[in-house]
Image 1: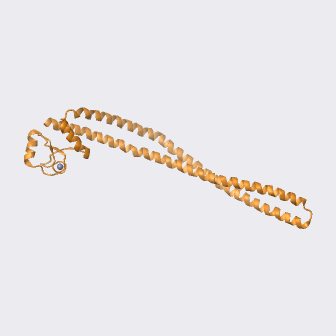
Image 2: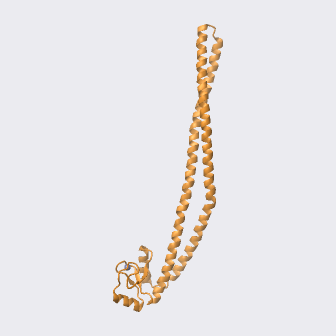
Image 3: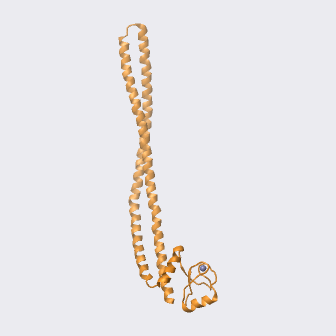
Length: 234
Ligand SMILES: [Zn+2]
């Protein structure tokens, strides 16, 4: 019986080790997720900056088109002015030229403002591109490091699981089944008695059962919390 306690304790050691490696493996996931998020955010910022420039560039093209039309109109105006002979018509034609000149000046001033804004926005696009490149460069070294950590942990885990499977053979089937069931619900399934009480929940174990456990090395289930109990040094 004592052999079974030792075999179970060894198995439990393996299981705790496996659990620890699994925990370390899981802790890598958020790091990778964080990388993905950072990269996505930088890419989204770049896309927004580029879209904003496109909007302004569309305005710029429209404005340039308007200016071109005003220029054509003005040429016509100037021809008309040359052609007119009578005074009243000449006054009207001059007014037309003046009005179109004002429109053209407005177009040009709007275009200048827009040009400056587009320059600033292009600088923002460039900054976003650099930020994205920086994120990618940073991750280029960090990602493989994490992947290396992951495969090292995975190798450790495979080895620990092989060890565990080998050791499980030295525990009787019914006891192994009981142990695995309890372990499924909590971190640790097997506890030593502590001062006549359950080592997990501290509930006192009746003296008679304690005596059996101490005498034969029998493993008992705690009636209060359901873990497996053994008497040390039995
Ligand atoms: Zn208990």
